[in-house]
Image 1 (cartoon, helix red, strand yellow):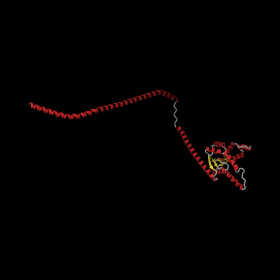
Image 2: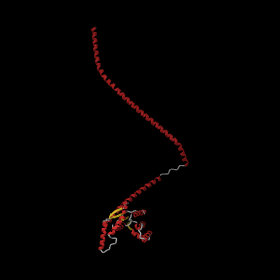
Image 3: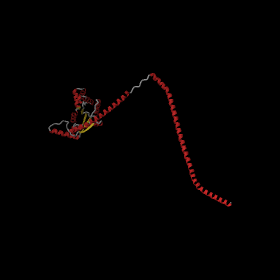
Length: 334
């Protein structure tokens, strides 16, 4: 676990850092302690820092980054670390990110202890009064006025880091006004959530790598399984190419003639089908016309036949009467 603790003076960073060291088995890295250790060890970076501090100057960021680089490579920092007092500015944070990237490492979280400045000032005043009541003399910088100056410096210099790490989604804010134990429990809870999210992310990336490896192995196995085509003799290939070139026009001509004959057959079939359709339509029309013209004649014939039947008996009766009259006349004459 690689962590940074942020918070104004009096927020309890030192207390929480000590508890995190015990809980996670990591080391607390303080820039002041690292500088003093590097100077005492006489390392190249430590000697450079010693000369700068002896002249009363501020140790530049690149020197501090070099000391941190040497320190996190030691065995006790293998499980992780908590940085105390660094970074203080955005450029320092960017330099730290570049260092960790070169070492193929990354920060797990940046924990900010958010406190109420008015409550902090009241705490300091109460603590100073209690110390004096016990006959103890507080430190020169342990008073409300000195704390107010340090808080103003923190806001101006360090608060941009909060925005920087928030944009990188590394910031975890914890209420520093709770009791010490409550703050410890809350830090443990948010860090556990971060660890769980990291495990899920690692599992997803592992499955993705396995899938890509399977795909690549399949693609690599496909060409190996196919047999290489047999090589043709050079002379035969040249002759076969010439023969193919000679046969190509004949083949194309034959194909063209076949296509033309097929087209002619199709066209003839279409014409015959159309002619049959036209003839059928004409025959149907003529049949309809003859049927219509024959219908009135049959009706007239039917109408005439009954009248003729009615007139026949009357003519027969008249004929018999005429015959009787002629017989009677003949008798009289005789």
